[in-house]
Picture 1 (cartoon, rainbow, N blue to C red):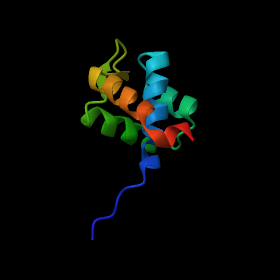
Picture 2 (picture 1 turned 45 degrees about the vertical axis):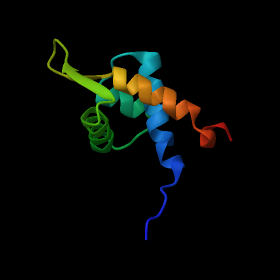
Picture 3 (picture 1 turned 30 degrees about the vertical axis):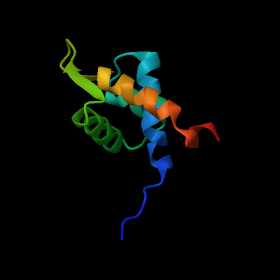
Length: 89
């Protein structure tokens, strides 16, 4: 039996991609605070997952800390997420 996934599972993804669109590069600890996503290990794991999906890019800053940024694919996914009916009410 195939079950259809609840489209609301994309709400966190939408909020995260919008945060990166507004803010530019963000460290995991900053994302954790701004997105209220705790603990830091869970926030970092989520950002790494989005990077593996190609929605974020990851690079090290001059201090050796990881920075995540919205990728072109992430921008495209953000536009698609915004177009979905479940987000409008």
